[in-house]
Image 1 (spheres, rainbow over the protein chains, first blue to last red):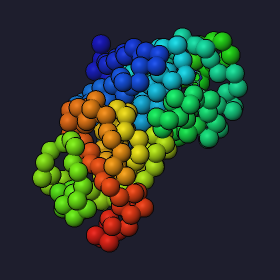
Image 2 (tube, each protein chain N blue to C red):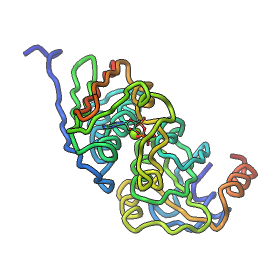
Image 3 (cartoon, protein in one colour):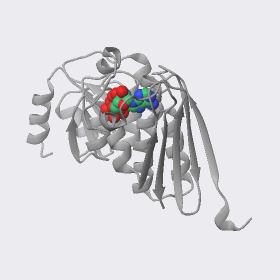
Length: 143
Length: 110
Ligand SMILES: Nc1ncnc2c1ncn2[C@@H]1O[C@H](COP(=O)(O)OP(=O)(O)OP(=O)(O)O)[C@@H](O)[C@H]1O
Ligand SMILES: [Mg+2]
C-alpha cells in the first residue's frame, strides 16, 4: 500500500443519556490528532464538531457511535445513531432551534447551536435523517 | 495574566488543578450554554459559568480554557473536580457574581 493511502480509524460507542461519559470520544480523538501532529487549528475544529455530535447522540438519540478516519489529506468524522431521527432537518439546522429536555437544558445543553457549530467548523457537512429513522452526520475536514 | 495572581487578588477558592499555577490566561468568557461556549470561547480564556456538572470540564479541555470560575459560591460536584484534576483544569469558586468578577478582572488589566 502506498504511503498516501494509509488511514487511521477510530471508533467510539456513545450511549443514550450517558452524560457522565459525554466528551470522552471527542477528547480521545483530539489526543490522537495532536499525537500525529495535525495542525492545531484543524484539531480544534474537529474536536468541536466531534463533541457536538457526541452530545447530540447522548441527549437526542437511542445511542450510536462516532467514527473518525484520518487519511493523508482529510479527516472524516461520522456520527451515526439508532434513532429516533429528526422530523424537520431545516428547522434542526437553524441556530437556536432545540427540542432538548428540561433536564438537558438545566445542564446547559439546548442552545440549538450544536448542528450549526458542526456545519461551521467542517469543510463538508451532510446530514441524513427522518422521523423514526437513524441519524447520520458526516463531516470532512481538509488537512 | 498569571492564574495564581488572579486567584490571590480575587480571593478565589481553588478546588482543582495545580496549585500556584504560573500558567497564563488572556481573556474572559461568560456564558452558561455549552454549545454557545463551544462556538465562541477561545483558547486561554477564563470561563465563568454557573454550570457545575462534569461536562464543563470536557468543554474547557477541548477549547483549552485553563481556568473555570464558578460564581456565587455555587457548590461543584465531586466528579467534576475529579475530572478537572485529571485534565488539569483549575476550577475555583467565588462569593462574587459574574458581573463583579468581570469588573474586578477588568480592573486587574484583563
Ligand atoms: N442525533 C439526533 N437524533 C435526533 N434528533 C437530533 C439529533 N441531533 C439533533 N437533533 C435535533 O436537532 C435539534 C438541534 O440540534 P442542535 O445540536 O443544533 O441543538 P441542541 O442539541 O438542541 O442544543 P445544543 O447543541 O446547543 O446543546 C435538537 O434539539 C434535536 O431536536
Ligand atoms: Mg446539540
